[in-house]
Image (cartoon, rainbow, N blue to C red; front, side, top):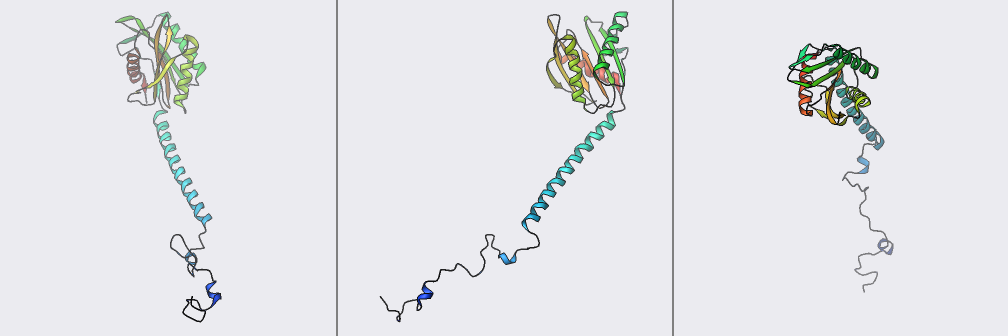
Amino acid sequence: MPDRGGSFPFDDASVADRPIEVGTEPFSIDGEHADDRDESTPRSTRTRAIVVSCLLAAAVAGAATLGVTVWRVTGEKNTTLSAPDSVAGLRKNDTQQGRDTADYLRTALAAEVDLDSVVAAVYTDPAQADSSVLFFGGTALIWTPESDLDTAFSLVSDEQGAVNNVHTVAAGPLHGTMKCGVTASDGSTMPVCGWADHGSLALAMFPNRSVDDAAELLREIRSAAQTR
């Protein structure tokens, strides 16, 4: 072994005992020197900026949704609803029994849903004497159409038994929400369909018809009965 005065790489034992230095400058994972970082924008400030940006994005999305709702309310609130003398091949039943039934439906709906005006009618089908249609509805500024329509379905449940299999169907050109279900009636089932938008709500019962036929017929009745 070479002596201390020979060719050994370290001439001074104190030098040999020094730790190996990786570098003389601070180590940085991203390749930048720590001294080069902008201390004027600490991590907490950057985090706060990100949070504010997210909140602003959420606010913009909420404003867009609110704008769509306001647009719908404005377009639908001024609605009128009538019970035409004839619609879709049906004729209004103007007998005393027909008028009494319409009055009952009007009163029952007004008691359950807060409406400004209410109409009701019993329609008969000249081609099918046992397929009368019971129609009732009203107008008001309605902020939650779907919820109010569900409330109206519960009205039928109170009188006829629960309305089951309630599902959304196409509302047609007047938009809003339209649903159909079935309820028990004289040992069979009877379709019940209804619509609601920000200006009107209506229900109809369709004895001796299919749900698909009832939905199509209600869209026709709506086109004739509702105006904006």
